[in-house]
Image (cartoon, rainbow, N blue to C red; front, side, top):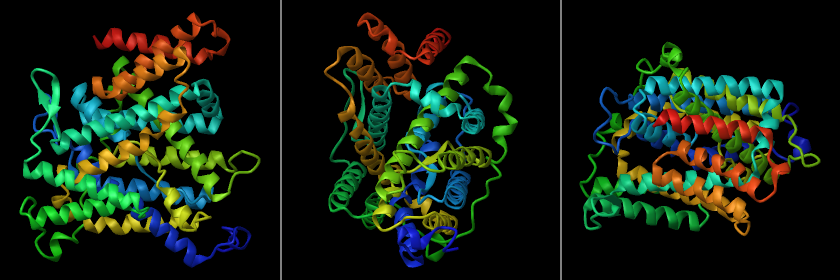
Length: 444
C-alpha cells in the first residue's frame, strides 16, 4: 500500500493521510443534507402540475454512495487526494430550473444527468474534452462560476425567508422578526465566524449549531432518542433505475440544453478543482496534471453511477483543499473520505432536523465562495464585460443557470466580432451561439 501510493516519495504516512481524509469529509459533509433538501425542493410548497417530489431518503443514500464511488475511484485509480460528491449549483439547476422552472419531471432530469455523464466519459476517453474546454474563453468560465454563486445564494436567501416575493418590486426583504428567519440569520453569522477563523468544516459545523439552536428554541422537532440519530439506510428503490426508464425523454431541444448545461458546468468545475488541489499539494509536473484522464474518468463514472442511483451530477470538490492543508498527498486520503461517506449512510434520521432554515446558510456561504471568480474577469474590456455581466446577472434574475449561460454565449461572438476580434473566437462558440438561439426559440 505504501509503495502503491508512494508514501516515502511524497513524505506522508497512514496517520497523516487518515486525518487529512477525515478533514476533507468534514469540510464537505454538509452536502449529505443539503443535496436531498435541494433536490426535493424542501423550501418550495407547491410544485408544477403533474410534478412529484423526489424521495429525500433515497437522495440521501444516492448522495453518499455516489460520493463514495467517485472518491474511491479518484483515490485508487488517479491516486489524488480529491473527493467527489453531487455538486452545488448543479443540484440547484436540477431542482429549481429543470424541475421547478421547466416543469420537467425529476425522472427525466435524472436521465439528462445520465446522458451528460455518458457523453463526459466518451469525451474523456477520446481526449476531446480538453479541446472543448479550451474553446470556451476563460472570462466566460469565470462568469459562469460567479453567476452560479449568486444563483445559489439567492436560493439560500429565499429558503431562509430573508428575501421574499413582493408585488411592487418582485422581491423584497422578508420579516426579520420571524423566529425561523432569525434562526437562518443565526446560521449565516455562525458559519461566517467559523470560516473566518479558518475552521475546517465550518459550513458543516454551522449547520449542526443552527439545528441545535432550532431544537432548543422549539423551532425544530428534536430527534427521538438514538433512533432519531442512527437508523437503517434509506432505500433507493424510489429513484434507482429511473434514469434508464426515462432515457427516451431526453431527445428534445429543451433537454439538449439541459444536458449541455450539466456537461458544461461539470467540465469546468472539475477542471478548476483538479488544478487548484493538485497545485496546493505540489502534484503538478511541468504545469501539467499527471493522470488527468484517470481523474476525469472518476468524475464522469461517478456522475453515471449517481444518476442511476438517484442524484444530480457528481463532481470534484474544492473542499478537498482542506484535506490537502491537513497533509493529504496521496489517493489513500480519498479512500478514507470515501469510507466516511459510507459510514454516514446510517445517519439518515438526522434529515428530519435539517430544515430549510438550517441548509439556507450553507447555500449562502457556498455562493460567497463561488463568487470569488469575479476578480478574474477583464471588466475593463467592454466586449468581455457585456457577455460576462449578462451571464452572471441573468442566472439569479431569470432563476436559471442555463438561461444565464445561453445569453452570455449569444452575446460573446457578437461583441467580439464588432470589436474586430474575430480571430479570437473559436468555431465551437459559433456552434453554441446557434444552439442557444434555437433554445430561446423553442423555449418561447
